[in-house]
Length: 211
Image 1 (cartoon, rainbow, N blue to C red):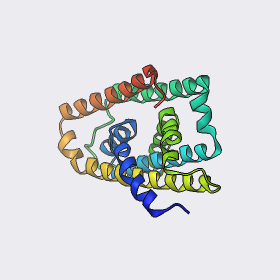
Image 2: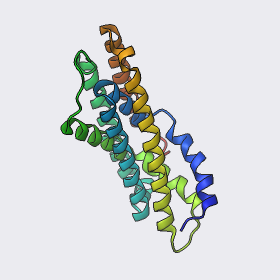
Image 3: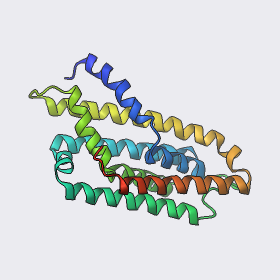
Image 4: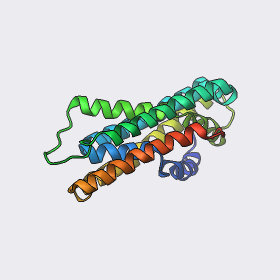
């Protein structure tokens, strides 16, 4: 198994990435504001699942393909960018997204949709895959159980992502009435959320780097 000092060193390093603003956190906030804490937490779970997918891909060597094969990286980058822009445009065009005149009840379908879209945002972001491939090996020696150690670090990364984004979702749920009680507030949050998602999509599409 992985040594405890390695995990202790890994946690603060990866937390700097977890808490940095990105499409995952913006989408979690958006769902929590529009549909309540359950939808926001479902989005957090979707992001954490995506992290596990990337970690599993790193173990299987699929992330190495993205790093070494330009065509695969570019294809995944544009798919992820297009999806973010699509979600942003939908927000800008939907006048009823942040209306909270009636109590919000997040049904199973809504929670599944929140989970699925957050998972898609994370999985289609090649920068997350390349980050895992470039960052994790710094904490894993080239030993026979390297795959197991990568898996453990992936689980830690996913757990930290879930804890942070769930806290973000709960906070957003607490302030949603303060932000959305007026039509002006609803419109401002809708335009801000949609514009930020589109901005992240364009940034991903235009970014020439790999990390």
